Amino acid sequence: RFSELTTIRRQKPAAFRQIVELAAAKQTDKAFAKLLELGAVTETLTDDGQLYQRAADAYLSSTKQGKSALLVSPTWSEIDAVTEKVRETLKADGALSPDEHTLCVFDSLSWTTAQKKNASQYEPGQRLRFVRQSKHFDRGDTVEVVAVIENGLRVRRPDGTEIDFIPSSAAASFDVGQAHELKVAAGDWLLLQANHGKEFINGERVQVREIQNGRLALVDGRTLPSGFNSFTHGYAVTSHSSQSKTVDDVLLVASSRSFAAVNREQFYVSISRGRERCHIFTDDADLLARRVTDSHERKAAIELQALRDDLAKLGFARKERLEEESVSPAKEDFRAVRPMRDTHAKRTTRLLPVQRLTQVAEQVRRWMGEDPEPKEVVAEKVTEKVTPTESVKQTEKVHRSLREEVRQHIEQHRQQRQQSRHSHGIGH
Image 1: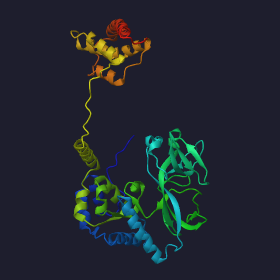
Image 2 (image 1 turned 30 degrees about the horizontal axis):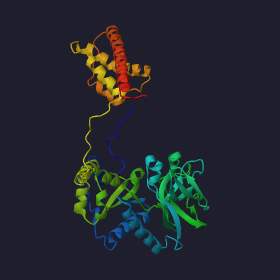
Image 3 (image 1 turned 180 degrees about the vertical axis):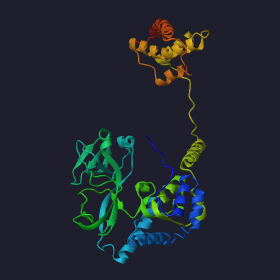
Image 4 (image 1 turned 60 degrees about the vertical axis):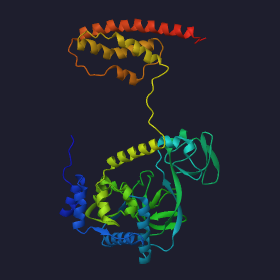
């Protein structure tokens, strides 16, 4: 049995709950207006970093009060900017160790399986992180792409040895990404971006207690495995990544540099992460109010049409379907069968056997050793649904008769086609 959730219960304050309910009902314009009324929107400039500093101060104020808090932004560029302000303030307060370690971490490119199989997609310097055991690599191994070779890659292991690797042979076993440097100190919060067995979960936030020989010991007593490098700072996350999280205070950072990524769905997900309150930081409240009413689906459709228009201006027109110069055997058989329909018979007597006829034709072709028809051709034969009104016995009688006619007709048609090919020198 299934139940429908009709009441939002996460948000405790009634005013905040009403705002989230409006956003859930796609009335994001009213939800944003309510936030303005409550003074939950801070508008300030971004030029001198003031916007990100105010957001960082709000985050640290909540955590100092013993509350759980989360900074959310639509883009990673703003996440990096506000994270920098948070860490600068933590250092100044002595909450972060001044002894920083620069680690090389893995940043996934989120490639599809099809992309990973295509060797021409890769570039030297990219990293492959293996999430499963494969023929040449263990789970957790990370290797560097050295060169693209014919049908494959040459990769370098951490010990410096190189090996040729065919990505299409194990595309489900690894992730593709880039390496970048991340400064980490004792006291830092990190966001894990991959699973490692059952002990470490993708999306989990952990705090660093100390760093020894490149190994990260955590406050909760665990230690990140050697070679595990899929993490980033854990003070701010994207709206998409925040979906599984619930905190006391959620702080949305969305300046004009990220407005292209703002939409109705993103706004709802972001503000609904908080239990007690939500606060927005932006440099243009009026424009943001308009952006949060845009639907992601509508935006995608508009962008697709704009892309088509741009391609048309460059001379790329949509290819029209042309009449086939050479007709496949399956198509010829279909055209041969079509005229056999009895247009004077009753509707049910006429169409019901035709539906079965498509199956019979396929059986006959297999009997003749030919390939079955494509599904598109079969679908084309039957253009309307029929509700049987005759007895099974009568229908089967018509079907048997038609099957025999089809078999004879196709055999005759096949012989004619072979004679035609021989007359043109085909098959010698």
